[in-house]
Image (cartoon, rainbow, N blue to C red; front, side, top):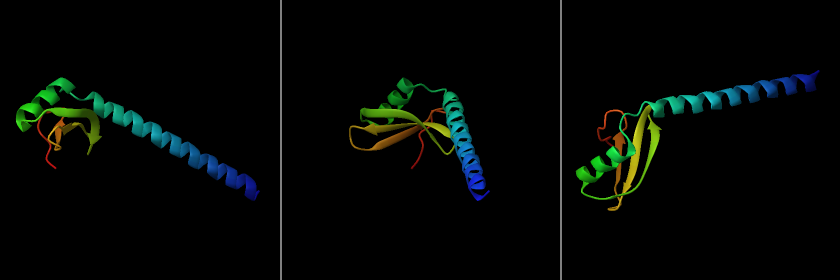
Length: 90
């Protein structure tokens, strides 16, 4: 009986974990799909505002918002909200 209970509990934990991961992935995809600013616009804005060229950029989620994170050639970092186009402090 004890063995059956342990296997059942393990199965419940596994299902809950897989379901949670799937929810997180689909929620992240939904957040990223709300971006209204494209990568080119974000890079152009960062370069104009910072006066430096963008070395790399990626779209990610921060605090429930889609954000472009960029590394600049002058070794600074720059972030832009992918919905509003505003620079993100921090």
